[in-house]
Length: 364
Image (cartoon, rainbow, N blue to C red):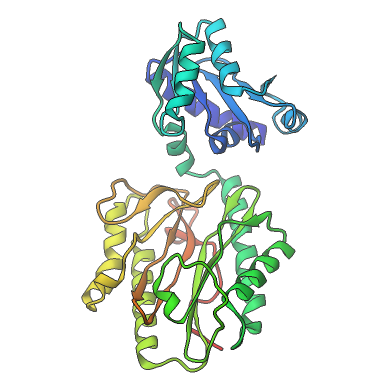
C-alpha cells in the first residue's frame, strides 16, 4: 500500500508545516507503521515539512523495511532516534516536532544533548488524530479481524458447558481465532463468570462455569495489525428473572448508543444516549466506564466516548459501543460491538456493524 502510506505522510506534512516546524520525528512504533508500513520493535521516522522522509531501523528489520517500504529512504542504525535527530541537524532541519506524549524525559534529554543546534517542539497527537478516520483498506482489515472474532465465538459457544473453567474458555476462543488466521489476540481475553462478571476487566481464573451463571466474554482478533473488539454475555442454564432484566436493559442501552453514533454526533451525547437508558432504570451507579472507544492499529484509540469527553464522530471512524451493568458480588452483563460510522449517499445507514454475532441472550 505505498500510495496509501504516501497520502498519510502528505497529510502529516501539512500539519508539520502549520506548526512552523521544519520536520517531525515520529517515535511511536504504531505511528511509524501507519506512515511507512513497517512493523518493528525499533524504528523511527523523520518527515520534513516538505520532501521525502527517512525511516530508521536496525539490522533485524532492514530486509523487512526494504520489502514493505520500498519508496522510503532507509537508514540502518541501532539508535534510531539519535540517528534521525542527527540527520535532521545535518540537513538544517533545526525546528523538530516530536511526540512528547510518547517520549520519556530521559530520551528527550539524550536527543537534545546530542543535537545542540536543534530546537524540539511538541507535535502533539497529530498522527493519532490522522489515524482516527480510516481509509477503506484499513476498514477492510478491521472487518476481517471482526469476522474472525465472530466466527470463533460461533464455533466455541456450542462447547461451553458446566465444569469448563474461565481459562479453558479463553484458551478455546484464542485457539479458534488463531485457526482462522488471526495474528494474535487483540488484547488479553476476558472471561468473567458468575460474581466475577461484576469486574469489567476480570482476568480469567480456574473458576468453573456453573448452572445459573452469566458469563461475559470480551475478546477479539488482530489481523493485519488491526484490532477487533467484541463482548457477549451468555447464560449457563435457565437465567433468573433479574438476569434477563439486566440483559434486556443493557441491550436497550446498546441499541440507543448505536443509534446515536452518527457522523457529527458529539461523543459525550452518544455516551449519554446509552447511559440515560441505564440511569432511568436506577442502575446508573452500576455502569462504571465509558460507552466505547476507537479501534484500529491499537485496541484503544481516539475517539473516547464517555461523560465529559469532547469531540465529534466523523465518517469512517470505527468505534465500539459497550454498555454494561455490574452488580458487586452478584454478576454483570456487557454487550459490545465494533462498528464504523458512515456518511454519504453510498451508505443506506449511518453505521456499519463489523461484529455480526447475535446479540440475543444465548442460554446454554
